[in-house]
Length: 272
Ligand code: KIV
Image (cartoon, rainbow, N blue to C red; front, side, top):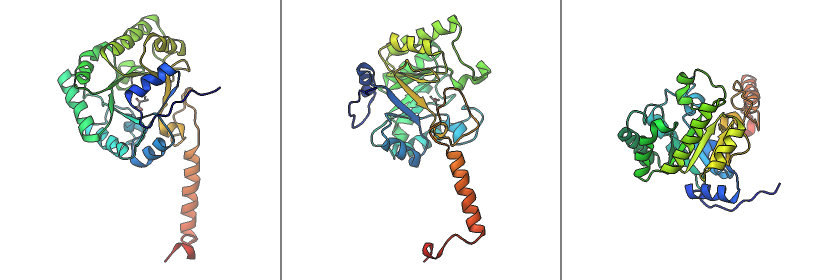
């Protein structure tokens, strides 16, 4: 299949909307540090998400809830220093935007000022509408996130597919339309039926980026450490692993340990 691809020197929120209109799919991956972000950006990714999945991937927490605003700013500023082309979107962590719109705006301003990120992402629909409007009114671009929203995991109780029932599916469509209407530039849809995700993508003009939401949407996002196989215990159906870095790194590190023990490393040519 031929791929429609216009060259974007720098990806902006407007470029993403253009990509949707031109039928070009949007590629998005997470990154949380300088070195990884440098590789991801120079490989041509459109959007880098400094996701609150850093809470799991970088800090080893069971959920995304514990990560703090200061920690997100640290990760985001490391990523920003590496990036020349991609749009960098930063998750507002749990507890920094749900209680009241003023606090939401203060949190978003801290992300933008202290990390240099280009946009923020928030999880939820009508229940956080006022907070999103307040952030947007300050000129900060907002990406929505509907479907499985991991910050609400204790409400859902499980990480299974969301919006299988009509009532939840209708609410999700309504929320997506509302997010577009108030000015969000894109929406992530996580772990919902592919047919519903396609319906949402066709109902709005802003890009819909899916994770476990099928192929009928405007772009795809994965957690970097999952797609390069650095993690190996998490195996949802939607995940395609492009490498098995866990195995490759384990082999390399075991070899290093052996070489050090045997005094094979460093060799004559590896010393001064
Ligand atoms: O935090 C994250 O990595 C995310 C993606 C799963 C979309 O929100």
